[in-house]
Length: 467
Ligand SMILES: [Zn+2]
Image (cartoon, rainbow, N blue to C red):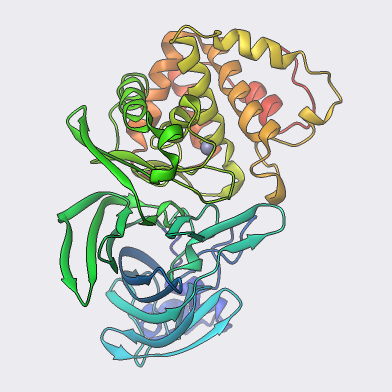
């Protein structure tokens, strides 16, 4: 979903003087074509995403050579203009571009930082669909962030795996890299025969569709809307297990050298999906699974429909956490990165609930223990509802205190309303994007209580809330 701006706003942004004739004759504006903006105004990632269009579908065709770790790729994006566009931006930090086409005709382009600025031969009228095709080749590099670490395209010894939160998608394909612009995806990934390729969604034509010159092409489709940071491919040697859980395919894979650690990945995934579907409501995608490899990034990621796990993260609770994100973060996505607690607080609380319902400590016990942390200490110092860019993955403020916020709400509104709230939230916002305010509004609607003070204390104060 994209913020839409009116033709009038676009004209004003372009520096046109607002005259009586412009106001009186909006038809004159129909001929005004202006550049799309270079960002979508996210407070933490101002350059992520671009204005003036809404991406609908990405087709990523990519050939990977394990020996050199080089790729040769063409990404085609189908988008709809939301203003009359003279030019538009994509986010792209990948290898050298050889060609850009818009609607099948060569287009001018230049690169500036993470922006790829594309000028088509003709203006793109508001409301009309267009396609942009970008061809590029070379060796992709991950996005390195001082505070947040590496994300995006990650080389492994026998291939590569993508984990792109928050803004690593641009490392491997040109993209409107903002969580609010979800799109469907097709992957056509070629690798030498004997190398396995996985991605989001479901395999098409039994995975391999052709073998040419010693290369096989693997096709995967993600047919539900997906935020770009949740797109993944995994290329390398994998032991793949295919099964069925709750009537949908469960496809898991691990690097054979991690067999000891991840031998339970398949059945833990099935167990977690069954339990979470009961607690959170209908599973939002057409398949599930997981991918484990030696990434060396020291995190796992809830890549849509099929999370990626790094070595050392085979714990049941990690799997419960990443799969809980399929509801909280993937299907119900963020409009702004500052609301990241909506993803991590709920996924962490899913761990607490799983323990509570599987013979472990109750969520209340976990909460009470954490609440003993002394006021004035570091644990309470960042705002859970707006931690700042560098703090967006802070373990205390976002994960633990995010889960404590959820538990404080549960205590206030009672179990019956709380569990109804979880299911209503995932149902009403399925495949959409949300803000913290949306959640507060729904919690107040279902409970009939004024919850302003509770959320203010837990989300927007940098000290220990009173209970
Ligand atoms: Zn998480």
